[in-house]
Length: 172
Image (cartoon, rainbow, N blue to C red; front, side, top):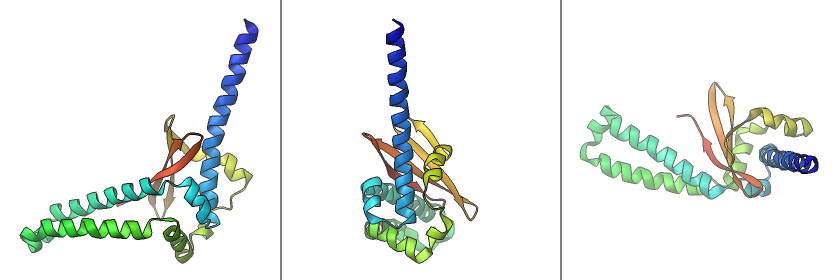
């Protein structure tokens, strides 16, 4: 009976360690893809379809909110506000499909020189990743970071043993 309990404890420990390490490794790989501007890593560790859909939803919600709740804009547009909302939605769809992809991320990292603000990936950042991970449940966690006083959130979801970025929440 003692052997069974000991084996169960050891197996549980290794499974828990593997689970946690897989999340830390995926976060580290995303970190490396940003720092080294590696399109291939970002293709593996970012679920671009989910990120695109979440960006579209977020931007469309903000645009519609601005169009319909801004009294000055609503007064200027009048009945055309519905047409403006439809056109804005199509423009957002085109812009997101064009720029939210590995090549668009690479261009953004190059133009904005964001890699100078990111620490170099090493063993310390791999292990330290556990400190910035906030688990929501067994299948998702998020990382938050601050830039210029605004908080950004990057959400990861589990796909088997791999964790992928599924949403990037930007402040309004």
